[in-house]
Length: 285
Length: 309
Image (cartoon, rainbow over all chains, first blue to last red; front, side, top):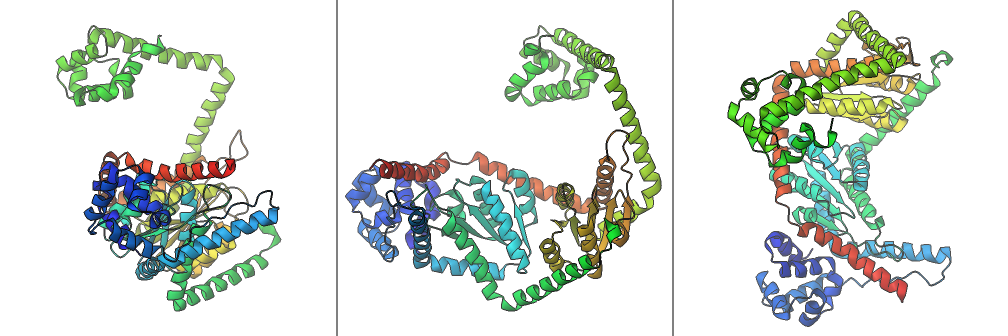
């Protein structure tokens, strides 16, 4: 987990337009940034070199050199993914490159974000209840996650972050609850509002996104920014889905006793349902 | 009448710019048009709580010479509406008669339902009032009615969930169910077997069960603690579901009345959250969209670059 990201998140709202350009660049193109000099960053972002230096100083570094060292350190284990679809490749070759990119994304995430994953699982393990939100297609993922955690014994509720549903969910949230925001592919402002309000209520939040700079990510207690490079499309959601399921697995690993009890009861109930079905008489139809 | 420029249209266009006093007048005229047609400027002013001069200024603001002209237009509008309703009934005599007969039938059906099921409804209300948590269950299209019920009871401060009674759905919901909970089942068409199994197993866990059903001989109806039997016969369709909705709404309203303290505090809290969310929207900077957009633009550019070279 990198200090520069936290420092930027903390002050993002107050930044001038030029500083914000730099912040967005460092958050979303961290890999590129690691290989650029002041002049390079300046060229890529269109702000002048002196501003790059002032930016670094504004965030408590002696200059860009020190900030750059931190960025380099952060991406030391990352190698930029440069997979491309093989020219005229077979279906098999294309799928192979997709799989390779997906697992590379997950590897990249694991290399630098393990600390945050641990924090996220910790929050879930200590939570009394879980609230999960996401807009549009992310809402379906939110529902899936809520049912998965519910099944593992953590009372969970999914809601859409529209004003009506969000205000109702927030009115029921309590200190000690946890919130997961799923923010894939959209700016997810409504998710951001919920995260900010939840924080005020003492609810710890985890946000999964492929963007390092969007509002909910900056507001989250634990942002999980998942690389989403894809050789075939604009972006891949596969790594984000993997990370979400890993949160669930991490939770299961922390609560083996609880999960074992739940699973035993679940299979008891399934058995009872089979028995009821078998005992159903023809006249019922 | 000139629908492009009638008073409702003029109000709609000007509404955002109106002062609070003018807006109160605008609301009254658009929502209670029939009442307004029979009021003088002074009476209208009294009804709305503004002074009569404001009524005149309001009329002028909308482009009328005074309230007299506006009032004439309101009267003409109401007259046309009444006439229109009359003409519609004349034109489609068969349809109008059929709908009228249907409405009468419905009213009689709801009365019949209440005469037969008042005590079951009362018992169900008491059970829900005492409930710790609420589980709504239904299959098929009725599932959405159960989901609606769960949301509605959520508004009354309950932890209310909706269950689709597939094997895994029922089994995993049962994990969290316990004594003090209430299960509310709705069965419309179909044999409702899966709902029946869910009720059976929920009861075994000490859950109090209520079933709203049009048939009292199906498994779900036999398994439930409290059966609210609703008539579903229709003179025109295969079956009717309006009484089921009435029953659900009755339960909700009665429970809401019994729990008015909880409801008031839940409402106040939700209102506070609504206001906070609204405030956040107002304070959102435009850059919030731009930063997300940039990611996609960069990827598009990269993609285009790869496609071209």
